[in-house]
Amino acid sequence: MSELLSHELRDLRPRLGNSALSSPLSAGERSQMVAAATVKIAELLNVLRVDHKFDHNTRDTPLRVAKMLVNEVLNGRYTVPPNLTQFDNAMGAKELIVTGPIEVRSTCAHHLMPIYGNAYIGVLPSAEGGVIGLSKYDRVVDHFSSRLQIQEELTHQIGQYLSEQTSPVGLAVRISATHMCKTHRGVRATHGSRMVTSEYFGSFSDRPDLRAEFLRECMSLESSMVQR
Image 1: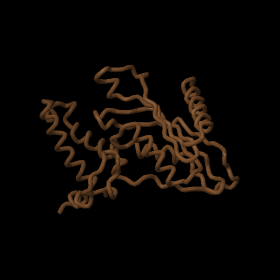
Image 2: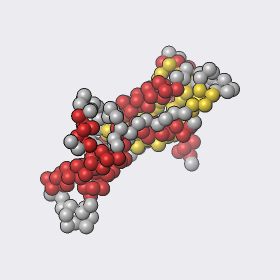
Image 3: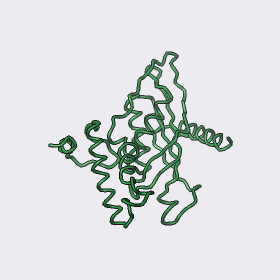
Image 4: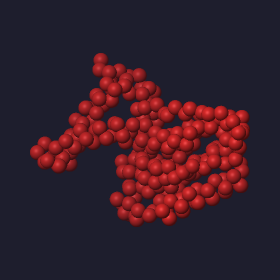
């Protein structure tokens, strides 16, 4: 039995396209997945009557696309989430922390088109708990973005993971992004057309003043980015 088939048999229960496999892919399983995907992408190009055998531009396209999908676009499905090393909240910080903009690069589950924009994360730390390094927020956003996504669920996954792993008093996530399934097909909207989603956990859920402060900080960070 091949290593890849063995992994498939271990993972029989239905899974959403933006959820992780029951266990991460090994290097051998990943290589076999790339090889199998290369064959299928070549078949698709044949159906679309795109020459990938003699055209110098598309000769290696099936392999390139397969590697891109497995190792980059969908990497968050096949790997474990980032390890969030926590540090003691030595000074007992308990005021709102907001970080952003964090680059979002994801792929729409409906049309397999890119989603790109920025995420902002607000944390109300526990005076008795721990804190994590700022770069960890970027790594979490990148991990959950590297799947087939819809923005609402991506926003929730980021917030849920951070909330469960770090146990803050409150946590907020806001994503503002452009969807190429809207700008490059259908209505062909301007690239300035964006979608904004937010998720609130803990004290953010029942404190409008805290949500308002978070959103003001997001606007401040966003405007400073535009002015650069």
